[in-house]
Length: 374
Image (cartoon, rainbow, N blue to C red; front, side, top):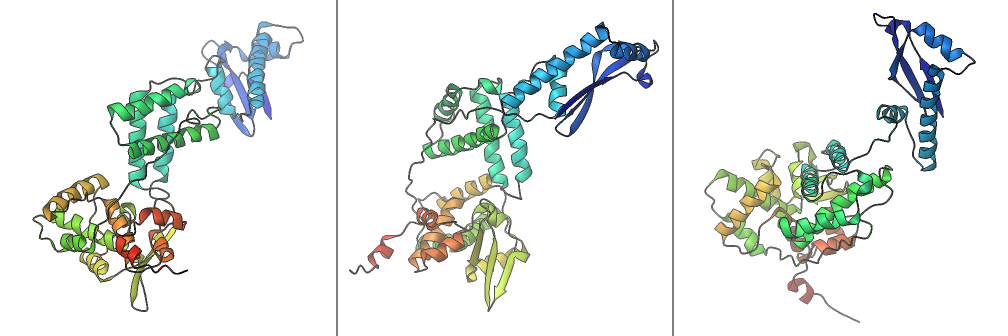
């Protein structure tokens, strides 16, 4: 529903007795006002707007009215739902639809992601989206969003490949997050088609070699020279005993630790997916938690992984220590200890067993100990 009216109030008169003509728009339940570029004495405005004869004031107001009606009708035909503010912006922009720019979309989406931090997503995810936006702006110049083409997406992809020199799977992660931004634009009627629609994003299967029990024990017992190394080592060992992701470890508070029949455990939702996980805490995990007052000494993910790299060298381990490796290690050691895939899946907070099989690599020991009977 749309209604348009004009007014000229005595209370807004200047020293000459003239007031700005006001435009009031009521559209779909919202009401907004703006001043037009015409000033008249209110008495003259009232006289001419009510006159049965055509006059300049009526012609001016009719012109504004018909331009708004034309814009409103076109928008309805295009499936857009306008507000009174949209129409006022159209009038103030000299009766031209304001162009929604590419960089405006990127910045707007970042703000929506930021509002979800701690409630739905982790700080790490927000940082990753920030990097995606930064790289996109490096590769593609600002332009009206509707003029964005698939060639711009390919330019972004080439920038990631040849300038930023990302690995294939990291590049795919960047593309997936960028695609999410433009899916948001389609869902909110900012563009008609997703420029990513014909872009193939296919991750490569990566061989992840988890730590053995011996390697994990070597890390746990290694003498380390500084407190920051000790803190990072303890967090890594905790993760390798619980399969917790970095963001979930960072959100542990004392109230999360529960006890039943002498067994301590954590039951909580994963930050990344919102799926519940249940993790029994063994003696090693409980000892580490108690040491730090049930709040693990974690900094940023980036600094944590850098310190882990340093620890790996000190311990003489050729495998690249990362936060994610601890999670893979925990899943694999649990499976090799005979814990069922269903239980490991619940511990990892996965929504299906296929995800668990992807995370946890079965060692030869598990395969060779399997009896095959027909």
